[in-house]
Length: 283
Image 1 (tube, one colour):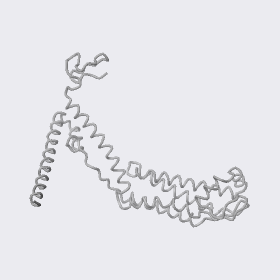
Image 2 (image 1 turned 135 degrees about the vertical axis):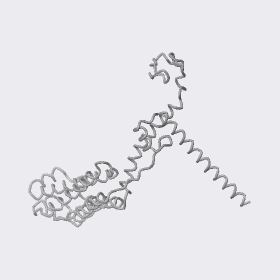
Image 3 (image 1 turned 135 degrees about the horizontal axis):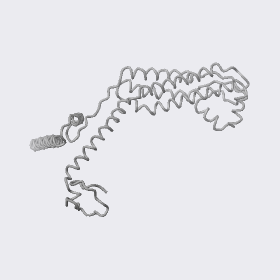
Image 4 (image 1 turned 120 degrees about the horizontal axis):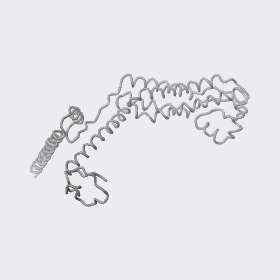
């Protein structure tokens, strides 16, 4: 059970009545205004910390022109994988003449995977081909993680994370192209990179360059002003840090909230006066 808000005595389960059995204070209504203000202060402080996260996420996407460009350059690489990535001369592997992301997916979905892997592992050509596909898949996983985590770009570890993932995308895509380019012809197949593979590599390089430029330029985070009982939250924290008594802080909050309320009433009265004047002129 809770404690009495007036005398602080612990309330037992049997103390179910509205008044405290020790001091007679109304447990529910005693100092209700102050308790509501305390809850409001806590809620506004929590809102401030949440708003900071929202502001950082917003800046990650539209904090600068380069940040907006990064969204585009982050999306483009995945489009290249739907172009021909590999040109082949089919052999025992049963590969089609061109391979893109869709055909690769169909190949592993519809083919006898066990027989395909056995044929691939039987010679160097097939093993290098499988290693290239692994690099392609890893680069796509790095792309997915990079794009999904863009909203955390302005977090404390955002710079290192984004550049690392972009570098992994470029590294794995380069390994994919090199493995296909230097895979010797064999009974499994004869393969060479398609123009989609080169474009994929180029777009990943552009993405890394833009990512570096974004952080070199910097992103200015515009934080929305938050208040605690009418006091700007930075000033509120400063008052607490300086040991200003709670009663003085509360009095200042009431003063400022009263001033804000009066200002709103004056603005409303002015709007009503202007509407009345417009109505009079119209008549």
